[in-house]
Image (tube, rainbow, N blue to C red):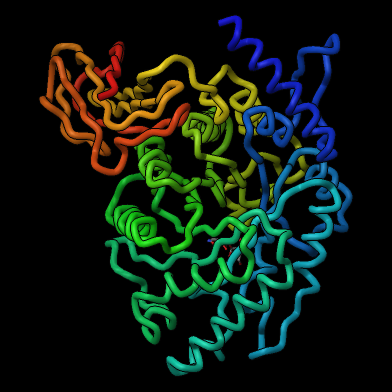
Amino acid sequence: MISRSLRATTRKALVLAAAGAMGLAGVVVLSGTASAATTLGASAAEKGRYFGTAVAANHLGESDYANVLNTEFSSVTPENEMKWDALEPNRGSFNFANADRIVSHARGRGMSVRGHTLVWHSQLPGWVGGLDATNLRSAMTNHINQVMAHWRGQIHSWDVVNEAFEENGSRRQSPFQQRLGNGFIEEAFRLARAADANAKLCYNDYNTDGQNAKSNAVYAMVQDFKSRGVPIDCVGFQSHFNAQSPVPSDYRANLARFANLGVDVQITELDIEGSGTAQANNFRSVTETCLNVSRCTGITVWGITDKYSWRPNGTPLLFDSNYGKKAAYTAVLNALNGGETDPPDEPPTGSGCTATVSTNQWQGGFVGTVKVTAGATAVNGWAVALTLPSGAVIVNSWNASRSANSGAIRFGNAAHNGAIAPGQSTEFGYQGTGTGTGVTPVCTAS
Ligand code: XIL
């Protein structure tokens, strides 16, 4: 415990230094040692993450808007200004001015920038849809090359392809899909890597936040890309939630299974319709979910104020129309400042492996996510033993084999996650009926 709190102090010192270097406001230094972060960006930085927002260039000149942006956020995503119709309304003629304003505003204040988005069926100028395969391939190549070259070295992550799947897991019939076929996503990612080797390359989509046919299809694609060396670094989960599309109970398990493929995960367009405590609780749970997946590197909300949200009737953001902090804001800030969750920099201790479980329990059912961490030496195969309370029955599990559905269960590594480097982690999960809390997992390395 002593070394852990020393590490926490060291980490805070590093974060303070980093926050200072980034020009981040909102870190209050107490007695020269401890710190209490008071803004979203600074609090997220203490957890090794960014906290971003979508930004519209035409509001940057409004003082309230700019003040909240500059004070609270450490990352920005241009809401519309980097879309194809904004950047290349006519073939071969590029207009970077509006997006440039956002990029220079952000970078001048130490914020990182997410690029959104290179290949998408929507906000696509009509001329693109009219091209034959040969011309479309060369237009896509030129668009990716020109746009990424313009901001080479300045973009933290690019949404290379956005929303390419349907709800049932099939491919969306976009012009890219229709003319270039299934390979268009891979082509786009290969072009993107060549155009800016320093940007993280993400696939981004909505309604992929929980495990379903659509997220399964994206998962299979990412798994295939990783196995064949197609460059992909991250998956973006848009996370637009409302009553019809609530925060899924297996959100964490879903993010974790993607992370276990070896990609970062990012919450890219978060907004949650509602108000008051209910909305605040949902925002808290999303924030905690990201903090509990070590490869969840940041959260972006899709706008600053309800006034300018793309779905203003749902009041889905953290600041009200007068830039007042909502209950949701406080919930997010408190969650970011909450206890030690899953610091990405946990150093290894001892050999073998350790396992911890986090259980999401609801009336009649549960999802358990088990994190397996290698000690100071690499692990090549592991098993986790745990005993479920009586009455609990597992109906599904992922990223591990299992010996039984109830009582004493032994989970073994899957083929893809048996090898864990020193100090690194992998996660597996299970879903069951009954009560699944109060279990103690014991890890054995083979
Ligand atoms: C939205 C913008 O917020 C609106 O201003 C615009 O009119 C339409 O697009 N998925 C995405 C985002 O990837 O680019 C979308 O943004 C919201 C859904």
